[in-house]
Image (cartoon, rainbow, N blue to C red; front, side):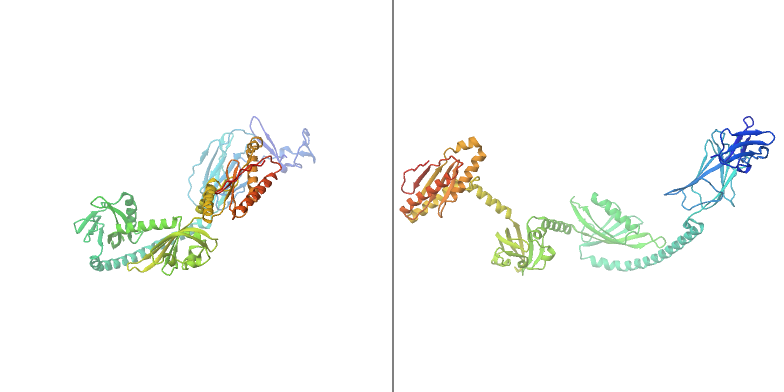
Length: 605
């Protein structure tokens, strides 16, 4: 909706602006609704009615400044504040990162690119009069402003001529309290006070260093005397020549001289240890640590590497600067200790990671140490086992508390298989090794128990025995087991002067079943036949599968007549059970042999 009417003279460029103060009664004009009466004036039509305009009384209120302020945008870390109606004296909240002033040409009918000049003034301070020229730009961006009141002065162009009077826009930049000058001054005073405190503390520290230095000097000779009979020797470092002076009375370094002088960096140190040791030494000289304590490898005259341990402290300082002037300490050869430490660590790792359970008991069979595998096998945590008797956490297969001494029976070790029962497990077989540990006086000190669960191994053995002695398909004894048992039965019959009968069954037309119905049906038929035959067996009778479709059966009756009756009864049962397989058309012939006397073959279809 129109706020004003603007008229421009095309030849002179003069602008005429007519607004509400000129008799405007409406915000809109009707198109073409205009009439001019020379006697009365200009009439225009509006939705509110006709307005009579006094044209000669109208005044031009367009400012003669070439630019106008359109908007001010203030950018913060998390948001942006935009003012589309900027007011003089605007306040910029604390935390502003960028202030952007958007300007435009006051001549709205001039489509030429806008060029401006600006300068920023701060009242009360001497300012430069130079303007900053922005060609073809209408935006001024300011950043990094301190807190205070500022005045932005902008010059624009009217018809290509720079304004004589600038557009002035005053504004105030506010800052946080910790950015104010009084807070900075307070901060500087605090730093100064802290610095004075540090200087006083440093001075007191220097005095303490002097006292310590005197005490170290007094005890130096006493320390040398105390080390004469030990495996350690003294050393000193002097800053003035950067050299180490070493006593070698104990021949720690394997050299003949009793006094050695070595410059810093001249030690035959292992390359992998040098950086670490030199870093710690530098920290000592800089006062970051109070003492030097390092272990590193050094090369002997023979070319072999050994371990040396070096310890020391500063004993002399510069009174003014506190710089370390001298360091003294002792050094020892620790190759043997490092080797033992490595062996102990290796044994500890092996003890902890072995798959066998290991328990170490004292002489009274109280548990002192257990490894992870023992914890898993027993089912009790090591913390709970420690301090308890072995019988409290484990028992033998007969549920009696486990004991160690009876196994040894006065010996030093015992190895064998045992059934053990833990607190939260059923009985399980273990391979057990028990050893007694004695001291130099042959007094019993500890027991060492090493055990492993052999349940899987025992099951594998059972499976192998079954595969070796039983038919996989029918579960009947195979040819090997049958021959072994038959041999035992013949020997027993010979010893007891008793009789032994052997029956051999063959399933006729079994091949036709396999060919017509398939091997799976033939296997099922064979399994069913074996089950039915087994159901008729009496005590002392055994049946086995020789392979294919052949089955053997033997019986041991007491007397000859009972043998005949037994054989006849068994044959009837066998044939009747096989005949009851109505869906089968098998005919099992039966051959009978008697130990010591042969009965004629009886074939029945």
